[in-house]
Image (cartoon, rainbow, N blue to C red; front, side):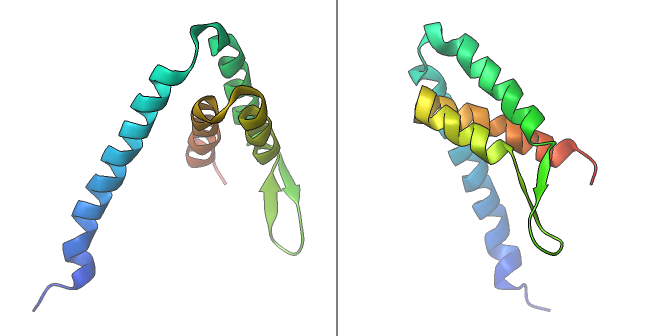
Length: 98
């Protein structure tokens, strides 16, 4: 039986995504001023906690309050720090039970 194109393309695409993401984190880590690390940490914690507070929308859908915290970090701290703050939201979304 022949392999499907998905099984052929999936491993290199996954590896490219992981390497690209790590590259973005490495680049942004060098661009955040040391004086702002306390503020980045505060927004990181707030975004992680806000991810635990969903706002019900319509029917069976909801949106997290973390979106607002992440956007505020983008405006207040800049895009490099917002990348790290968004990491908290993603980690909590992956780890928390549904």
